[in-house]
Each structure stands twice: as C-alpha cells, then as structure tokens.
Image (cartoon, helix red, strand yellow):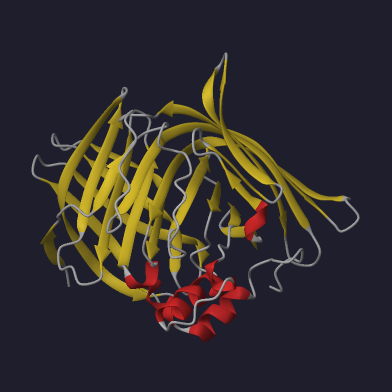
Length: 364
C-alpha cells in the first residue's frame, strides 16, 4: 500500500569545505559526525567510515541525557563519548566491522580547518598538485584481539557548491554535503595481537563525504530518516527523507550533480511494501521520489551492509528516470535510521557488546 505525501524543509543545508570544521557545543546532547563512504569500481566492495565527536548509539551518551533530564547530572554525565567506525563489505557479505569508543581527552578537532583526530584515527583536508581531498587514517580494535589499520584518500571530484559556512541552529539539523563525488583509493590491513598480517585488501572506487550536526538528542528528535546516493557515469544523485517526531510532512529532497552544477528539487514520495529486519526495524522496500518536472528516483534495498537496533545500511538498486524518459541504473548506498529504540537501556547494553572501548576490542 503506497502513501503519497509532499515534503517541507527540515534541514539546514550546505555544501561547504569551509564549514567542514568542528563546531563545539556546550550541551552534552549535541553531536557532530563526519561520514565517508565509497563503492568499488566493479560494485563488489563497499566501505563506510564515520568519525563522531559524540557517539549517538553509545549507552553512555544516551544515559547522559536521561540523567540530566532527571536532574541527576554530575561532572561525569557532562562528558562526551567520541567514536570511530568502519564497515567493509565484499562479495555479498560484511567482512569487517569495527566501532571503537574513546575517552573525551582522546578527541581533538580543528575549528578553522577540516581536521579531526580520535585516538590513533584521523582525517584531514589536504591539497596537492593532483587535486584536493581528504586523507583518512584508521587504527581500530576488532574482536578476537585483531587490529584493523587503513589508509584512504577521498580525492574530491564534485564538491563545495556553497562556499559560505552554514548556520548552526539549536532547533534544527545541519547537513553539509561537502563532497558528493570523490575518487577513492586505499588499503586495509588486519593484524593479530603480535602484529602479524592476517589480511590485506586494496580498494579503488567512487565515494561521497558529508557532515552532520545537531544540538538535540537524536532519540527525542528523529522519528525516521531515509537517505542515499548513487554515482552514475555522468552524474551523482542524492536523496533524503527526514522525518522529525511530531511532523506529518517529512523534509524530502533530490539532488542531481552534473558537470560541476548542483540541482536541488523538492519531491513527493511514495513508500511501498514495508518489511522488518532481524532487529525489528520496519522499513520500506521501495522508495519512489518524483519531482514536478518529471524526474523520478526509485530506491530498492538489495543487501544489508550493516545493521543494529537503530539503523540499517544497504546496498540498493537506484534507478534515475529523467524527464525525457531515459533511465540510469546503478547500485548505491542507502541508510534507514529509526532511533526510537535508543530509549531502551537493555538494547543499549546489548548493542554495546559490539563496541570496543577502554583499549579492548568488541566482544562480538
């Protein structure tokens, strides 16, 4: 059964390298993350890396908000909980997944330039003779006393469409679509507790980078959030459908990037054939976006790259139909976020088994 709705604006939007800096906020509920993803040239591999100044899925972060709401705030509940994650997917299955949370004193970021360090992990914006982009370096603990080390480069192809830094509003979500299209290359090395190589994977593909921040607790703000992107031979298509609690009109937009130009469209949407995954999240198996000038995008999940009680990340079939009827078809990365379960402490504790912290890898 399909439902047709019309979107309204909910995000504060930007596409700015200048705004890709850290915006420190005093409220312990505030969070900020830098997101990098890429698909290999043959479509068989995917990599997703996220740096967070406050880990929105951490039970310690979520307990902080509850303690403050009950008037139980202490010095310890004002701490932040930075984290770094990577998911590497190949040939139809998840190969590596690492989420490491760190003490607040192991986080540092630049307020004047795109640069962040969390533990031994870092990213920074660099310029060279062959172009500009992001150097990303990882050193993360896996289960079974293994360690994942990686070095990647996100070389910007299409980026920085609005050079002015975006505003930070206390009651809105700020989304900076920094580099919608990048050339990505890198290497992942997994070693055992003695430093001996267990696996080496090289990567080459096309990627994406954005930056999100909000001053509010995610579980009290977002009902659900569906977004994705796909790189075609001659353009990149990006969509989002962002639904805040208490709103009946989700903010829904479609972006087409082609030949150095960003086109933004308001779109109506249809959700069809809902299903539930193993963690209980109910999600649409088909999302259709349609603009007034006849542009249409269809997104259908194919494989789960990563999942939890709070989100699903897919490899999805993306079809872009232009106004003249021509169709573009490829595979892209999409995500469905449903943070309501963050309010359940027992789920927080279960999900925490998959997080490394205090110098130890995750249990599972």
